[in-house]
Amino acid sequence: MNLRELERGDHRAVAELIELYDREQWRRPYPTGEWKDEYLDGWLGFVGEDGGRIVAVALGSLDPHGTGGVHLVYVREELRRRGLAKQLLALLVARFRELGASWVTLNVDTTNEAALAIWRRLGFVEDSLHLNTPLDRLAERLEPRDAAPSYASIHVQSDDERSIERAAIITGSVVASAASSVPAPRPASTTTSVLFLPNMSPRRPAMGVATDAARR
Image (cartoon, rainbow, N blue to C red):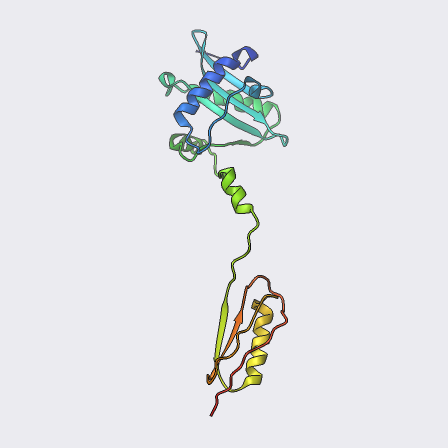
């Protein structure tokens, strides 16, 4: 087995390994997209050759902050469990060090449990979460919509109209909005109802209070 640095003439063979990886491991809800050889421009890489045929690859690059990023480590299925992936990764990490990197990052799909176990054994830990959603769904949820009204109701049983009015004003300044309204009292009732809607912002509205003293 010959291990060496990636060369431009290797791009097509490496693209075939990437396609194999995608068929084996890609479980994301969106498509992989068409591979283009120029994606490798500026990347670092090492390959494993067996009889002149490229059968393994480790790819990475440095980000603008000088952090090494591992993009792919892949070995053809029939040649796995021989330490080839670890050897290629070691070459890539050594190159990161030569270029001044002190940290290494990578992305791994949560569905790839075998890879997760390997990377964790090598000392990698989670520090972020990659999220996705269909564009149309996101655009729909970002469209402006009229907010549905919200309701808050306070019921007080008392003939002390002055105290009820003061309490309603204080409460309204916290939970009501400029669109708040108060319904008329029900006749012959000892219950005072104060209704606020919608509860959009904590500002003091111009509001009133409906009271209905007990009639005796």
